[in-house]
Length: 277
Image (cartoon, rainbow, N blue to C red):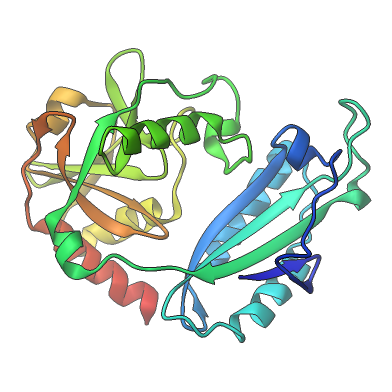
C-alpha cells in the first residue's frame, strides 16, 4: 500500500492518526474512492468536484491543488493492473466538540491493488438483500456526501455478507428502493432506465452520473423517480454501479429472482470505452 499524508509519502506502517483527531473520535472526515488502471486514474475531476462540494457544505478544509499534485505523483508510481485509491480529509485534533482551526486540517491519499471482477462473474450477476436498517436522518446532508460516519452502510453491508449476499439495498418507509450500501441502482422497465432520485437519501454517485449521461446514446430514456420493490422485482433487468465495480447486474434480491437482461452490457461497454479512452 502507498500512503501520502499532506503530499508526503509515508510507509503504511508509519501512518498514524492522533487519538483526539476528529476522524478517529467521531468519524468526522470526508472521503472519495477512485479506481486506477495502471497509471491512469479514472474520473479524477468528477471525484474531486464532489469532494470539494462536500467540503464546502460541511465546512471542511480541502486543499484541492495539493491533492491534485499528490494524485499525479502517486499515479506515476502505480504498477498494478487496477488500484483502489482513497482520498480522506480530516479537520484535525478536537478539543471536546469544538472544531479545530482550518489550518489543522490534513489529507491522506492511499493506493492498494484492486482485483477487478472477471467477465464470467460479472455476467452471472450478484445477489442482493434488503438492508435491515434505514438510511440516516433524511433532513441531514450526510447521505449526499461521502462522510466518514459510515455506520449505516457498514452495518448493512456486513448484514449482507452474513446472509450470503453481495450487497444490501436500502428502502425507505414507503417501501421504495433507494441505493445499495456501496452502490447506486438502476432498473430497465419498458426500455426506460429508472433510478431513485438523488438528494435527501441517495448519493449522486460518479458512476451513476455516467450512466445517466450516456444512456441517451443507446436511445434509453433515463428517469429519476421513486422505485418500488414490486417494480424492481418485475423489471426487465436491474443493475448496480459504483466507481470500483463499474456495472454489475442483479439476479436476486433475497428470495425474489430478477430477470437478467442484456442492455446492461451495452451500457457497460459504452461507459468503459468513454472512461478508459
